[in-house]
Length: 535
Image 1 (tube, rainbow, N blue to C red):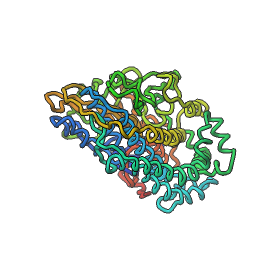
Image 2 (image 1 turned 60 degrees about the horizontal axis):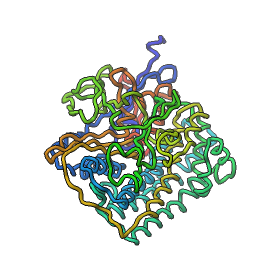
Image 3 (image 1 turned 180 degrees about the horizontal axis):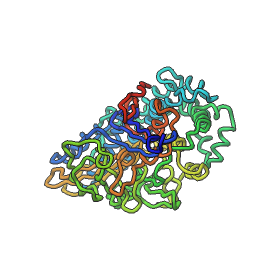
Image 4 (image 1 turned 60 degrees about the vertical axis):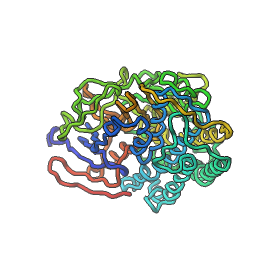
């Protein structure tokens, strides 16, 4: 076999288990991925739909962009109009918006972990692991003890969202100037009881095996490993078990990525962002924004004017130059084909004007949380950054730890919101509609999300969205630089091309939006190698 013929190309379509619009092509040589392409197969066109509409149309339309992150889109749409119109947002409204965002993110963690990610630990590839039988008992879809409990209880936090917004998903209770709800004392009491139920029936006994207070004592990777060894309850909790099994099967050895990370920051402080502007946002956030460059071990703040989109390898007729979203015109290619040397995706390649390609998501948030940049009062947590350095950099396993580590912090912030409501004070101040430009951002569970809006003549002139998956799934840019997931796939070991579960591990560690069927075929012969239905 020659070196050239040793390369096997696999097209995997779709890769995951929700929203099947992502395909992956990988070149494999000697049992390892040597090149990769990610391809978004679905054109949505929300930016075109909103053009010429009433400015508040974004509050109705954009929450439908995603069935799992609708509250995050609503948050962005609201803050974008707030900054465009120069509104005043009362502290109660900021708390109500934050609480909705938090409820949605808290539900996403167990739902994602059990429903989309941990299922792969029951793959027959791991049948020789000492952890395999227990993994099947806990994580097998529908029948696993932890799967059933985790997926079921993930529905509890969004009951809090429904108390505020009337429903979840697809609510529009956040509006410029505040929120269209004023929770009663009964609503607040019910929300507290829901949080308590979530904590006492899953978070502490099943997920952590300890109290929140004990887990919050973990400050470093050494602390974390000592916590696992401290008690059988810790080691055999779902978190402790997952971490030990992941090390055993090598999830800490691949899936790294591009090495630079971004978060817009989130949760505006209720006393610091009542007169929101684009320029004042960074200094008003509880969870600070930032870019972390692991090659130089440096942090800097992130700003909206640093973002650029490149369509050199995407199905848009917009040239090859980097464009700021305010300047995009969104011209989709009418007839497209899969040309891996040319255009091959509906996703744009998102870049930082100086730092280039960046990974978005919980790993990015936690690496930025470990920086000393920003305001003195803003949230700081050095645990994941310490683990990153001691484990030798990023991996699938660390990306998962970052995701699930957040849940205790989000739970505490939800408690803060409920504690800080002043029920006799306003939740809404009617704004004056004007023309202008606005920008709103947050962190959806899977990463950095933001909306840009330009209002002219009382109508939307331009509306742009960059979602977390746009950052991560984007194709090569004009310089030929791979996107974050493409880069993370390179070096991935493939034990069996007929069952490339490792590719699924990498893609799902980014929580990319995919569906429930995985199949693979040899692209040279067209032979279908295998087909799997795993959930």
